[in-house]
Image (cartoon, rainbow, N blue to C red; front, side, top):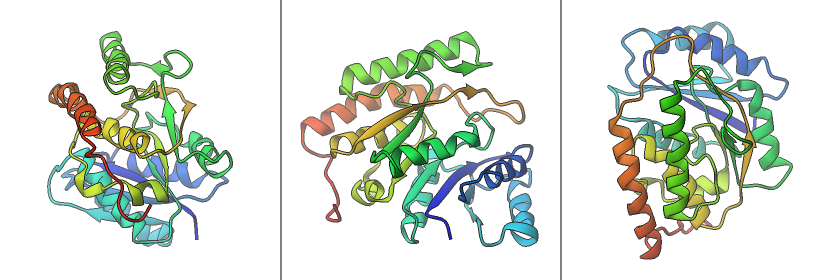
Length: 248
């Protein structure tokens, strides 16, 4: 049994999914994996099912949903799945190797050994650590995080990072059913909620590498959600609407 579960949302990731699962399982630290597939027509789920049956039945799990329902809802589904079991550390990670599985133990150590509640794999804590992104996208992401920090006063340099470790108590305390955003702003909302509720957040420097296989699922609409959503988050804090569950 492992105390850690890595949640990997997928949609058409047949080129990457087996490779990323094997990369996680090659680590010395034992992690379990939960793949949440939104009805990928390319057979992503079938690859996971084969690996479950042939090799990793006790460490690899699959939840299948019908159609694309958004990144945020996939993670919320995964968080609830993990909380229904005995995992103490719950990770977010992309399937496309933009997040290096070798950094998982570093995020884990920040929470399990150093006492932080949230560990963020940060592209910007030591400069700009992004490889093979177009300059326009780098600048958009970098200044989006600056905008978020300006509006919310959240002291995290990479507010939109999707490579994160949460202690169990963080996910138990945040009202997951009230997390509003589904796209880019979901990552901001989760970090901001943890911050408002008093949890300790550490940024762990990582190098983000743009995907080599498959196609990006990002589109411009998610930036609009983030821009206006940040203002809404600040208002919700000022009005006292970000509250813990009764479990804290």
